Image 1 (cartoon, rainbow, N blue to C red):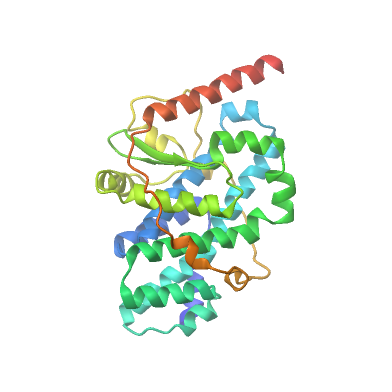
Image 2: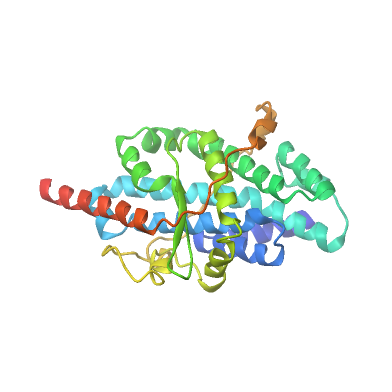
Length: 311
């Protein structure tokens, strides 16, 4: 078995569902903490799992139709799967390079890694710039899902052009929370999730938030001590309060989804001036968001009550 075959075999084994992806990302970070994107990806993947199972909660069953909830689930799942399929082989390549002390960039090409990331991996191995590599991976993966998910005719027409999507975006789609085992919650929210530049901005800000020295250890402790189940109970257990909504676990809620990738296109061949994505930005500061999160859930509860009254 070739190195590429072995990497792809491991990637496919880990790309079973949201939970397996989250575990693989976070385990990789524990072994290679210089690859900060892996922890960021794991924490964002946890959020994707919570959003998936929320769709089957009693509140969302009242607010959103079964058919649209199914479309939203498949959108989350496809994006989650796509990012892992593209990024995890790169992480395994780095692990191989680190172990064997033999840098073979031809393997990246064989793994169909974008020319943008091939250059960024070279830069990282030469300069050791941890933050730039994380930013590069954020930029790369958001452009990968831009072509395969956000602009895909099915998702664009059935999900992102829907009036119901506006509701889901306001309630869920584009905020990410980082919980702690102390019951605190940190996070960020962005509108215009359909815009690749907005998603990159969010990713970069989440990186600075996650690795802020005031809160990093608390969030990492949550990651280390809390196995992902896809349920918001994962973090509500530490908070001392619940929403009153149900929060199913992912593997009791959804079957395994089979995916395929017919043609992988190198997005960076058609995007100019990628250096702009590394421009300095005003960094997010850690603000405790528990009260804010409660307000979001109160809004959803009131919407659920209103929907129940008028139907």
